[in-house]
Length: 108
Image (cartoon, rainbow, N blue to C red; front, side, top):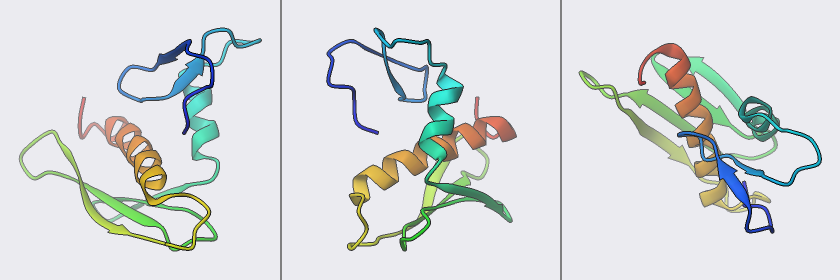
């Protein structure tokens, strides 16, 4: 997610979601995360959080590190022909996976 053109923005605690401070209406962090996830699919497969982007070959899977409250990237599949740069997909999938890991109680 690109930062707003205005230098005024706030970042949600641990979620890295930029929200303009001068927005015409208040936008919650939850609304911003929902908007970001609109083009990504998050699934739980066994002990992995898997994030994909429809219409591309992008895939990222994340796991809880054994014996620690950490989330680690386990597998990343690239798509050089996708309309989104790889770095942007990785950043967005990480934010979604991190939110899911918190929801599951894997990390705090």
